Length: 332
Figure 1 (spheres, rainbow, N blue to C red):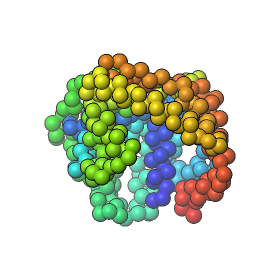
Figure 2: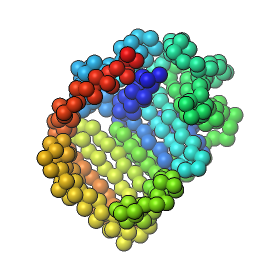
Figure 3: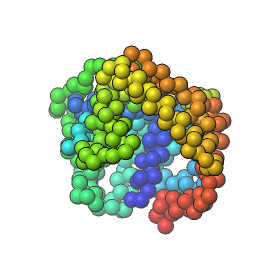
Figure 4: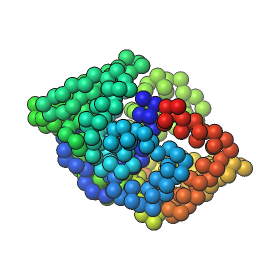
């Protein structure tokens, strides 16, 4: 099961293009969803940066060929779309990951059955795999036909299947949130939208005794009412984002803090070539307060992103880190 985390990472990176989110995936989302993120496979995979990363995965021997042969599933090629959703409740958080693609369910079930203690159920509408995690939570993955997989805690997955089959009320997501999801997913290769404060996503016990800079920044975070953003992969890698504060004064303060953070990143780079290169890329970021909102735009030539990633790979001890990651993905 060590391969699972690596494959989930690949899914999140390559499960990403500009078309509206699939309504069938949206129908699986919980009605009280507050944070959604999505990605489309084709454009990201076929973009210059996507091809560069795929080439690096192959060159570093991280391509999980044994897993692909055993399951018939290639996370670099078989994913069409990824959608994640959360109700952003810090006391009882419900989260789902929904993936659209091509799945050989029989092969996957056989592989999981041979390598774990997962329970397999054949339901009228899906094939359900469930297992108990180390922290005693029951997790599940359900395959709807051969084209959709939904993962999360068992109860959340079961509720999603009920919504999909029509045995539960249809999804009642906030119409304003849904409109923003449709707009972003139509315009961005990868996107994120939330209609709750960033501070509300942080557990209370993580901020109760905050001191120093954290104590100063936290009040600003509490004034954030919503945030959204996206990535577009062309000859330039373009990031756009918007944060909405409670009023124009707090938006101006937040914009000033973001600009200061960019300045401090440059000053703190020192002799570290990776940090220096990252700081240089961040210098092109545009931070513009507009009323109660702060708009952020960053456009970086794709070749510069490649150079930065190459610099990270060549960092000291990177060979040892790559070797450890390779052992984890192969289970050796």
